[in-house]
Length: 169
Figure 1 (spheres, one colour):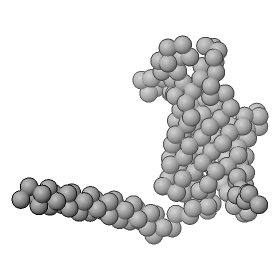
Figure 2 (figure 1 turned 30 degrees about the horizontal axis):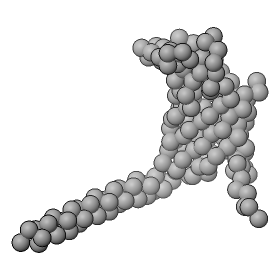
Figure 3 (figure 1 turned 135 degrees about the horizontal axis):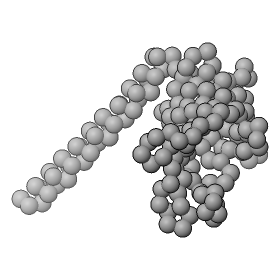
Figure 4 (figure 1 turned 45 degrees about the vertical axis):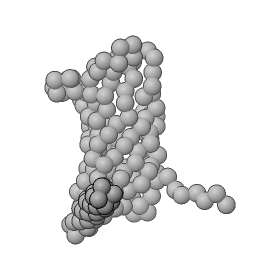
């Protein structure tokens, strides 16, 4: 009797877990399908090399779910006068006519204590070139204190080149 009840519980748990997995998959598929119904192009999705006119180099990846990650030279530093910062995390949205809006945040912190110091918010308007493998961007970078107040701002620009797939052979 105990063995039958135990088997029934295991089967019930497996059935419930499978139901949750299918529901989550259906929700994700529905979300992606809703984006395609809205006509949101996926031309920006992928990884890119970026460069600013001041020589800053970066790697940026746009994910199909609308999130973005960015790494830039100088993230890891040991000079307290120029504190390190995290990789940048954010979101992107299609604006129409080959243009994409991007908002990315990163956190600067004290190299000795790891205490947060401030945030940077980078807002971009990226325009894909006709070849879809290069792009240009206008930028606003804002320094935001820990209370959420913008304490500095500057504008800039960048160019991007898509990282191509390179087969081993």
